[in-house]
Length: 224
Image (cartoon, rainbow, N blue to C red; front, side, top):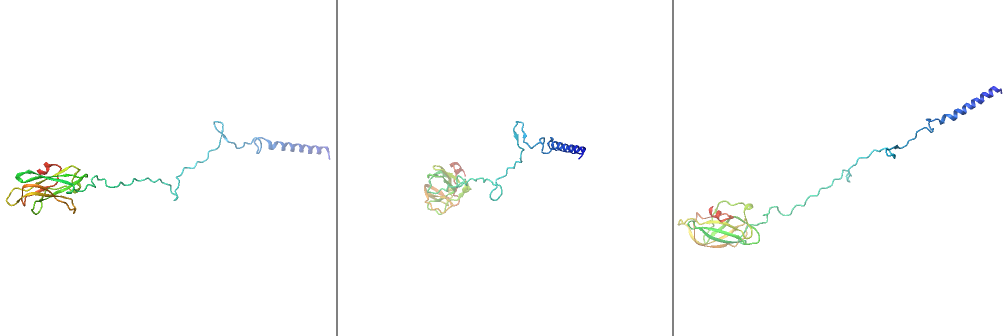
């Protein structure tokens, strides 16, 4: 081989070796030392902070049926009994009261009737008193209107109620009686023992006798 050819081959070999050593190690080449690698982002405090992840929105706790579970609101139990303070106040009967009759107006043969609650509980004086005249048949005619049972006069123990009884002027058609008897309106079939009062010389007209409803004062009872 000639000397020139040997020199050319040697030069080519040196050039190839130089290219191989320089190519892959340059900064910025893939796999080279200048290639940046993924690293955490530095936070202002100097500590590494991972990238935020998506936060799931809170959801209602499902019940067994799959729907959001609701909390039941407790209800108050119904009150026992009635809210009406008078719901257990029964009508007065002759077993609950004492009875007196006193002269009021001699010219009209009138008497003031009075009952007093002698018991330990309140009772209601309903409507008109039921008054009979001695041994005469029939009873006194009701005079004036009476309140309904819900508005009837309430008598506490020791309290009294009044009614005005009028026998009527002496027209020569009536009779004189020396006593009267009273029972109470109870709007029931309760058997009562009549309460009697002495009324000497009490004249009873067959057409003009009458009695008022129970009232809470004597003046009203005698003015009706």
